Length: 213
View 1 (tube, rainbow, N blue to C red):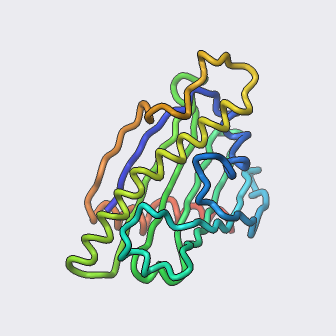
View 2: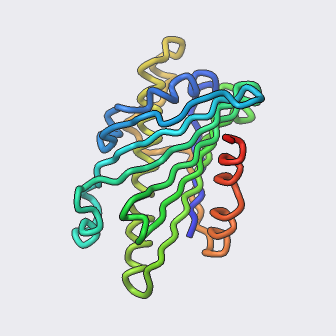
């Protein structure tokens, strides 16, 4: 199963990207407990590659039976990113690992690029869910995970709006987006298992690993 999400920030790409490493902490990401850089270096063409380890607290919004998969109440996520200043593009791939990975593999691809209006940044997300479980348990796990993501990506978006509003000195308060408003200009689409397999087996994760050497 995959979910596609498109969002827009009313700030230019250069400004949004300058805050990429300042995403945590913020009032909408209190579940992020720690972030550590594992690797960081310039690729041969000048792009910046970074691999980070994020530790996140499990939300209380998930069903009690699902908490049994998280004995420590935490989940670890590996985040790989490539920032291309020349092409004005950021590509990010995140995947969970550890014990929970045996039951559900969660992967997210995210890109940040200028929109047609260069004063606006376009954010595209692709969520991929894979599980080796069968029957009712698998269906319940997939449905719960998708529901949680539908809330999570909105919090991530509102967190970025909060950062942009906090650090921006060039936009008036009337021009800024409010982090308390409902998420605007978003589109969400759900795709089939076949499309999920195509994405996870042949698309960006392979490109990122190849580029990172």
